[in-house]
Image 1 (spheres, rainbow, N blue to C red):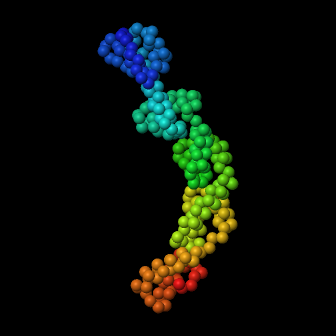
Image 2 (cartoon, rainbow, N blue to C red):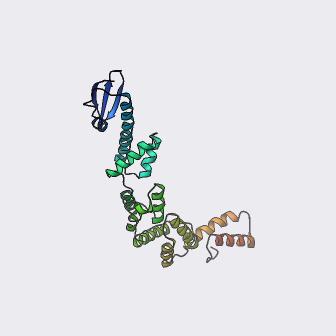
Image 3 (cartoon, helix red, strand yellow):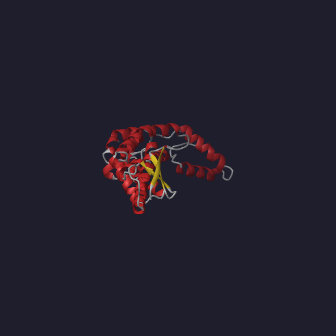
Length: 250
């Protein structure tokens, strides 16, 4: 087959036109690699090889386009290319090229992710680790990054979160509030030991206004069904279940 002409297109592509009326879009790297600007004729076997090789570059540029929008992990790029139906060979070659050129680096990703999480979120170290592992980042790549999340930073975050929760508490007893704080902060990836250390250093006591409000709420509700000593018992039982043990009938 004879190459009739070339046409340069945007995004580093060239269209070649053959004498059999077929045309193909090839990346500039392919044009140079196979010296297509100099070649006048091309065999079918060679053309098939070029088409296959061009697919590798197509996969690479799709991944590069993704990475220019936002930093990604190796696994995220692999999944992205798989969703676009690129072959395992296309993906492997693309990943190697991107890693070699520095566009794809899970260690750098981990450093950026940890740093941003510390500054902009309320996530604890354990939650950050789970998120990184879900994104395919291995321990060897995030271990060093996690060193930025020191125990003092973790403690400071816990103290701020607890202080905020105490100020916004309008219904819970000290006992229930402490339990909720421990559960929520643990679920958010903070160390249970540090949480308990902070909680034990604080004097969290029942708020009389909260106790009064809860008592009145359940008095209004239970007095519709009970009265006398039975009502008193039901109220006491409810207040105890809410963690209010030291209270008088309001």
